[in-house]
Image 1 (cartoon, rainbow, N blue to C red):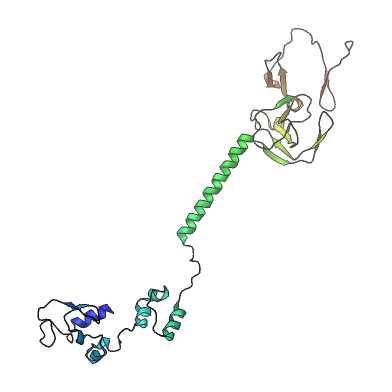
Image 2 (tube, rainbow, N blue to C red; image 1 turned 90 degrees about the horizontal axis):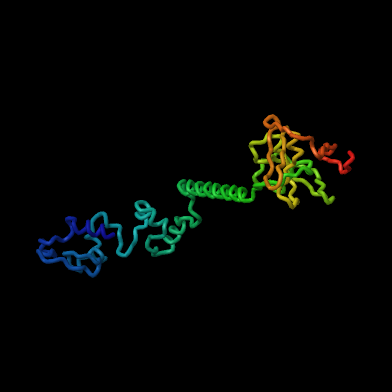
Length: 269
């Protein structure tokens, strides 16, 4: 409305500074107590007064002092009405109209940028979780096995670090006669061995972490040489080693139907 007053002051119907009937005559502007503007017109000639209604310009004829033009707000500045920034209505009719035009206070729809960043964060969380799982698997992976000539198969008590090849319903009988259920079949992470020599059975309840079967190695054409004292043990492919003894063996045994090696205890045999 202030803009309308300024236009009205500049119009030909508004008193001018040089107008002898009410102009300022070069005098400084004064604040009008009715419109609150710094103007030249006298207070009694202010357009805010109803007595000066007939002197108002044409574009102010329908305006009344203190009235808010809500039609103009809704047409030219609709966001003022929809966001609740419009002045309070003077009567119930306008109040109902504003209530009808009020916006929904529900949650705002998520923008494309927000959705894109949310997807990126979810992918990053998934990648970090995958890395943690891999790190834990590496930490829990079995790094060594006990070489056992009495084990008919290779057994491990954890699948971490192993390549699972299927499920298993076998029951493993230990040396003390207890029975332990198997859960999976797997391959050892020893790339130097053939696939058959890497085959293992996962037995979660087994106390020993891993038992590498000498029998499984022999069945896959590997030769195991146990060295004396604490020198260790060597495993060769059968085609890569040639054993040349200088004397006859002290003991000579055989392999039974279970795949285990047996030696005689009777010196006469």
